[in-house]
Amino acid sequence: MRPGVQRPSGGTYLRLVGLGAAVGVPAALVAAAFLSLVHQLQHWLWHDLPDALGGDAPQWYLVLLLPVCGALIVLGARLLLPGDGGHLPLDGLSTKPTPPRHVPGVALAALGTLGFGAVLGPEAPVIALGSAVGVAVSRLYRSAGEQGTAILSNAGSFSAISALFGGPIVAGMLLVEGGVGIGAALLPALLPGLVAAAIGYLIFIGLDHWPGLGAPGLAVPDLPRYEGTHIYDLLIAIAVGATAAVVVAAVHRLGGRVARIGARPLVLAGGAAVGALALVGDALGADPQDVLFSGQNSIATVVETDSTQLVLVLLATKFLAYGISLGCGFRGGPIFPAIFLGVALAALAVVWFDTSPTLAIAVGASAAMAAQTRLLFSPLIFAALLVGTAGTDAVPAAALASATAWLAISRLQPAPAPDQPAPTRSAPSPDR
Image (cartoon, rainbow, N blue to C red):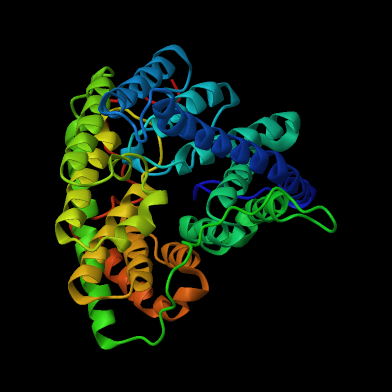
């Protein structure tokens, strides 16, 4: 919640908590439906279509043209529908309430981005769609006012994000860390959001005899158990944390330079560049689909790579494709591609020093997410969920990586003071 929004008092607040619980289920259902649609679109475009064209893998012309087709969809959504397709991913995750009339543009732009191979994640559109559900409910409850709208918008967002991040634990920690500036009013102001995240997640895990839709699994499967923390593992964690911060800062600078060009049709050139980078990766031995997309499903692949050259190819091509996707006009979230880069950095330690791949995932994910979000505890919890019980002993190293990355990014990119406006960009406002 934004620090300037105070919680309503008395019976109004209790009703908003109840409405937060009611928002949780539809917001989670919307998120689940959207994520399922993205998955089906990716499968059709990148598996069924190449198969129908007679190939075992996407043909080179599909790798090049599908991101351009996605860019056309994004451009159409931004030009023809209200809301500019959502906010610029270079600016991080938006906490502003999403008007329901922006939903078609946000959803279409996100599908054009995520389904067609641009290097962004689903978290930003998922948050926006959940927020729109909360805003719609607040309009049914006419006495909610601006404060109630902000509270229910947050409730919808965090119910939706719990569907993506594997439950209300990460969502709740994001609430707490994101709202820490509120001070003593923090917990009462965020309670409806936490209730919504918890209630919404029940549709996945089930209730009583109803089995639910099935909980989304974050844990990387078949990881070897990491047992016992070693001094050299802690040194690797520090090195990965510092390097991840440098890489994230550099990719932001690249995205910023692309964004300063400002022209909306730039997204078409961006799509072509992303496809071309995937072809470069393919020519150098990488799977082009590991260069494309958010990288969420390629984490296990990169830590299993036993070639320094191949890891560096993935790092370089993903870095460039991510920076271009951040700034050229695609719409999506910035977290998962950053996590992939962090894990790829840690994968070099697997190749060079025979480090545990489980440790590499834990420290790489925690460090990169901390550098991208400027949060400390949410990245650590997310990394722990990624490695599951196989990586329980890797959590101290992940904490050290997260802390190092946070300190380094704070020096490399000092956050603006709370009373300073965000830098103005050429891209139009999502509230147009």
